[in-house]
Image 1 (cartoon, rainbow, N blue to C red):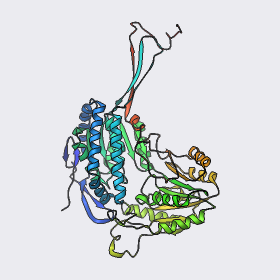
Image 2 (spheres, rainbow, N blue to C red; image 1 turned 30 degrees about the vertical axis):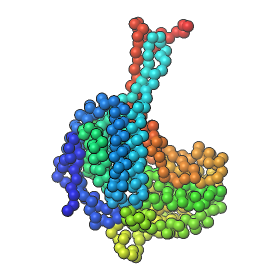
Image 3 (tube, helix red, strand yellow; image 1 turned 60 degrees about the vertical axis):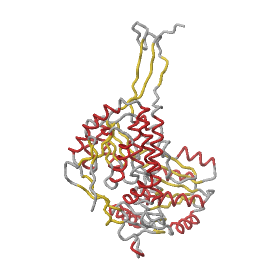
Image 4 (cartoon, helix red, strand yellow; image 1 turned 45 degrees about the horizontal axis):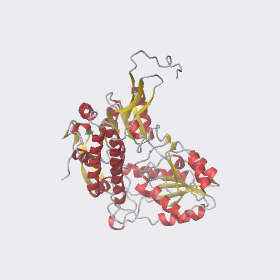
Length: 501
């Protein structure tokens, strides 16, 4: 019998006011129903906001080091349940078990890092320009943070947002992607078991167009953090701008890996296979463009197609699988449409470009699989070179030198991640400066961010804020400036400041 799950609102697991549910299915086997989850409505969100206000009143007064201790326990529980959560996530999202284990590990790292920040929410004390006066600042929580997260990292991305928000003293309302509600449920269970006061976190399942929109538009939610498409992010940005909300956007990418003529080609090959086809290409940092120096183009392309053609597709829970399914039928259809667009624009399919055929044993027939695909003859400006596909499709572009490679890399509307393989230290440092992205890797692929460094991009990838690392704690807190004048007289800043030794 299919299990029915609930929202977590006002300190209790509750059914949606709508009485409506949606099914969560395994993308590797669409006949496998994981559970039924609430298709919530605005009334559910309204109750969640009322509860979060009460939670904020309590949690914001809790000393930050104590908040850090709660997150330390969260990290410990995630360590204990890593394998269980990873398997549940693979069944729900599709990526291979090694990757979902890494997804949980990123949540663990984020929890332990956040715990230390409970003793490091630094303010500043600076000299006043006036005598017998102190000038200082400190950081304080803001209120309720609305967190809207995507499907591709069902635990890691929610923790990037949630743990810093909680450490800073905010209450959170968590709206996960409809494709991965079960992992969200497991995360909230961990938070509650770790001792987080129940009204500090609310879990509201449902459609982005209903619950997500209501969350963004509600005047009592002053902070919104969203990861998803650039188009949706632009709409959210317009709303939050009009309502004077604090907003963090992490959106699309069209990331390029550049391989120069002096590169270690075997190392670069390992990198592009992982960058392009890891997570079935469903990463905002995925390597979706490969810019090859003309002197090694043909040789490297031959190496690439030979190795990529041997990648094993299958369910992520199968230990032999290297590439899992796409998240749903619409995602696979989008990939197929872009391959057709590429051919119409004059590119060639050097590998893949189709739904797997002749599946022995029926391992793939019930899932949303697509062969790892390599497109050659791609020219700058083609749609497959410019637009985010979010699937296992790699567009290969030829460049005459590093200057042209950098120009091609930068000539897209996104600016998330970039990668350069070279032995030339001068070229590497030039690229580090000139590549127009928020993240650059040298001799590593475009994926692989670490939890203690800022993560995010420029241009239409984001709006200037960063997740991860130390910068995210500034986003989830406000600076308050304090002046204490103990002179006993009126002192006027900028006026009574004449020099007098």
